[in-house]
Amino acid sequence: MAPSDPLPPLPPPVLVNIESTLGCNLECVMCGSHLSGVTRLRRSMAPALLARIEEEVLPGVVDLSLTVAGEPFMTPKLGDFVAVAERGGHWLQLNSNATLLKDSKLLRRILAQSGSIRFSVDGARPETYAAIRGQDALATVQANIAMAVRVRAELPPDQRPRLALCMVLMRRNVDELVEMVEMARDLGVDQLEVAHLTVLTPEMDGESLRHDPDRCDAMLRAARVRADQLGLRLVLPPPMQGRPVAPRPSARLRLALRELRQARPRRLGASAGGACTACAWPPGSCGPAGGCPVISCKAASSSPLAAMWPPAPCRGAPSPATCTSRASPRSGMARC
Ligand SMILES: C[S@@+](CC[C@H](N)C(=O)[O-])C[C@H]1O[C@@H](n2cnc3c(N)ncnc32)[C@H](O)[C@@H]1O
Ligand code: SF4
Image 1: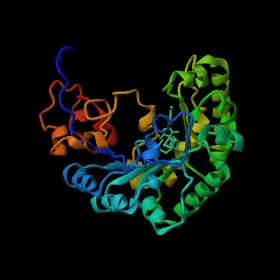
Image 2: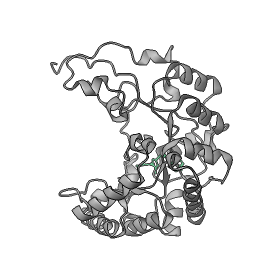
Image 3: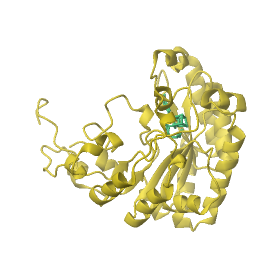
Image 4: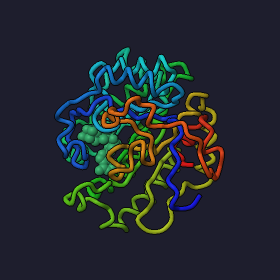
């Protein structure tokens, strides 16, 4: 394929990311949705659009993520979105701030239908959490996550989703990275996923660890050592300088053996960590024309929705697997 050739159409999606709500109860300092003011509008996906997506897009889809921006547990009639996943056999994915979780039938349905749920906790100390997330809610969030871990343990083994903490790394919380590793282990989640801050406004740049590369990389190394000691899976972003900080081979082997023992068919197939979080994508890279097959309310004007993925054959595919296999969520991300 010559570099000037237009890219062939995307294959139909295997992961669909819908924005069930834009509303959010927190005001995180780094969040583009909060800063733009849209979270305050509390807009949510209309039932008619959900019905169209179910009928026109979801057949054949493996993973259904309910989070772009906003807080999914603020979605009015969240149960209707869960019911769509239940009817279609799709595995849910959610990112939540964990402030609103309740031990309820709905939570049990969500857990049983989910491949993975990520809880955002950007500080290990109450004052850091409050300064970043705009509410003094660390104790509530920890109690809610512990409750979700408990409820998961009551589900049959093949209905237990992967649970993770996630953290956006900035100058004001980087010193708490080791404590975050310990918190993830104490809460009983499966892993801690750490991402660098995406600088969305000029004012945010002061928080970027690019200004403090040595401190950043020392903390990444210290967190890796602690995670290896505790046997926690830790997903780290690249260091500012040098090579990625990998787990020790013995720690990697121990983790792999443990995860193999716990593995269930559902969880083996679920999308792995590092899925897109809308705020972290560079502008323009999401959407049917970009690298990630995301449907948002913005795309709702396409009629029919499936026209976004015209069934033209792929040309010049370097590997047939990236074009034809719908077995793995990752293959759906690939361009031919
Ligand atoms: C927009 S939130 C929506 C889901 C939910 N409200 C939450 O906080 O998890 C999705 C993820 O994006 C992350 N995020 C927000 N702003 C970010 C930024 N500037 N850079 C990197 N990640 C960011 C959040 O911490 C969260 O993990
Ligand atoms: S990061 Fe999540 S919790 Fe924080 S303001 Fe944005 S949408 Fe809300």
